[in-house]
Every structure is written in structure tokens, then in C-alpha cells.
Length: 471
Image 1 (cartoon, helix red, strand yellow):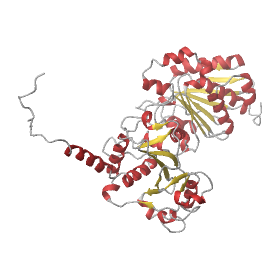
Image 2: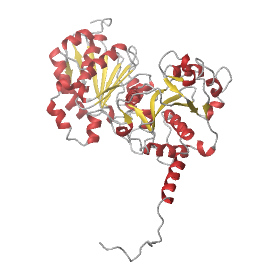
Image 3: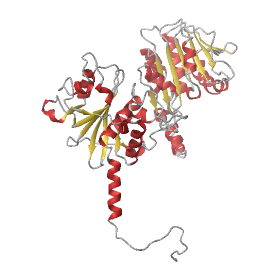
Image 4: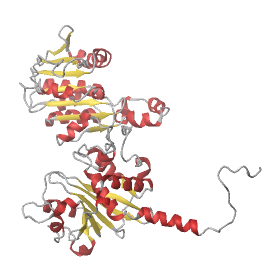
């Protein structure tokens, strides 16, 4: 079948594909540079790779493709039986000495390789050396057992073909490198639970998984891997602090917090819910390469100053005040004006409200701000809507979800580790130091009031006294 038709329709007629498998082949046809899938047990990842190979064979006939897994035993016990199941009946043959599959109908071939580099070997050692992959496609299985090195080495084998495509598949682990690679390329990953393959898995199987430890089932079945240990904001618990079915009420006071960045600013929009006595993150923006005016327009598409409500083009989240990083005072785009001054301009070029900031070294100290925010999480003073939380997992750029699940302590020193995802948390920290700095004093004052209002007594009990009450 020619490239114009792509072979997708014919393949769909021959095989019954689940949504993951359909999505994966559609991404290949779209020629995404990096296609990353992080999926639960039994989701059909291995068969998805085999179906992708079938598609590539028809889509780019007469070419060679590369299939990589972590070890030979894994290939022999997992991949090869699946390939024999689907490719054998179609006439494909396997050359054991070359470790190569051949499609006689198109002349396409698939090189099968394991990627294992002993720690004693230099990084220049490449188990894939010598292969010339003319289809431009490389499929890598079991990415959770491999490092990003395998993708870099495989990419070097795709030099002579058309536009290269990396297809990366693995089980749910936190901070999956192959998912990050797709996001860095501006592409969204494929994230599916085991239930995507429900038509081919029995109800008894799903019932059996309910006997697993909660954390393992959430990771390997529901595709919600546990965050890595050592997170800075371990007090944030998604199961308690992500709100289902939360509804915004226009009477709620609104705020905005901005972390400036010429390349990737982050904006959080809050609504204070008086019934929950908490600030709810109900929207976020994490654009790339924008000017202040462009950033303002993006914000205004979601939120609008309450004082200029009559000028709003439609329903919005109404904001009453906001804050931003002090670095914005020196920021200038083409105009030379500071970001704070530019944002004070009326819509559509600005927000029409002043943004607060501080240069107080005590407040701007990162560790002080981190401790304040940790206490706020402990008190559940910041919550997140389910919509923001779920969309943050699939976002191609930064998100508050990614930041919370990756912001960790440096192992060698008591400082948070910067990994490029922390910008939304910086915006949240600014909000905390600007609008919740006095919360601790208020709590302490309430405690003091309660303690001093208790009835006084002359009875004294010394620590370690031998005179104790009798039961």
C-alpha cells in the first residue's frame, strides 16, 4: 500500500485495535518525531508495537526498521511470541542468525536488538552500532528499565531514512524520561490505564488487581505512579487536595500569581472558596516565548479584572488582586517598561490591576518561602481542581502537577533541585509569601488566646514527680 493511503485503513480492517494502538499508529502516520506511551499492565503495549511494525512496513515499503528492548531474554519471552502470533500468519519470516524479520509482501525488514551496556564499558560503546535504519523508525520497548541513552544512540541509526520517528513505550514510573522527551519536543505523551484494553482482559483479572497494595495498583493499573521520594512538597496529597466536581462561583474573590520568564512564564489563577476556607487553583498558563502583551492576552482569555467586568467579552474568572516575581521590575521587552508597569495597562494589553511584589530578603529567601508553602499545604489552604490536575499531566510544557511531582531536594545540600519544571511552584510561592505570610502569626495568636483564656490553677505538677494519680 502506498504512503499516501498510509495503510491505516487496511490495518484497521484486518485487526481490532484498542484506543492506545489506534492512537500510536495515528501518531506514526502524523510523523510525530517522538511518540511516547506510558501505560498500565495489560494495556496492549507489546501488540501495539507489533501493529506499528505492520503499519510501517506498508507505509514505507522496502525499508528497514529497528526494534529495541532491554535484554535478549525479554525479547525471547515477550516480544518474539507476540511477533510470531501476528506476523507469522501474514507470511513474515525470521532469520535467527541476523535477528531480523522480513515482510515478503513489501520487502521491509525489522532488526531486533537488545540494549545493554555494562557499567564497565565507556558510554561511546553502542550495542546498535553498524545498523542502517532506512525507514527512519525506531521502536523501543520497556523504557522504564532503560535510560535516555538508548534513544540518543538509536537516533544515530536513523540517518539515511526519511524524517526520523522514535516510538518509546514503558510502564508507569514517576518522571518517565521518555515522557519528558516527548514533552520537550512539544508533543503530548500517550497515557493509558489498563482499562484501555478491557475488551481483551477479563473482569476476573481486574478484580484480582484489587488485591494488590494500593500504591502498586494505582501505578501499574491506573497509571498513577507514586512520586519519587525526597519531594520538597511531600505535604501535598493529591487524593485529599484535588477537588472533584468543584464549581466556580463569580462571587468568590480571585487572585493571580506570575513567575516571569522570557521563555516560559507561569501563571496561576486562584478563587478563594469560603466554604473550604482555601484558595483553589482553577486555571494555569505555561506558555513559551511570549511578550508581556501576549501573556496578558492569554490571561485575559481565562480571567478578567473584576473592576472592569463590564468590558469583559464573556464569562471569566474575576480577579481582584495579584502578585509576581520581583524580577519583573527590571524586565523589558521591546518597550523598555517593566513587566509590572506593562501589566497595569488596561485590557487587552494588560490586566488593568497592580501586581504586588516584595524585596524583603526574609520573604524572598527560597527556603523561607518553601517552609511557608509546606505549612499552607499541611493546612489544606491551597487546593487544585480536577480539570487543572488532569490537564497538567498531559501538558506539553510545565504544569503545577509536574512541578509538584518532581520538585525534590538536592541530595548533597538542603536546597531544592532545579529541573526546569519549578516555575509554577515559584508562582505559588510568591502568592504564599504575599498573601499568606501572616498566617503563622494568626495561628500562634489563636493558640495564645486559647491558652491565656483557660482558668488558672495553683496546682503544679513537676516533670518526673513521684506523686502520680492512682487508677
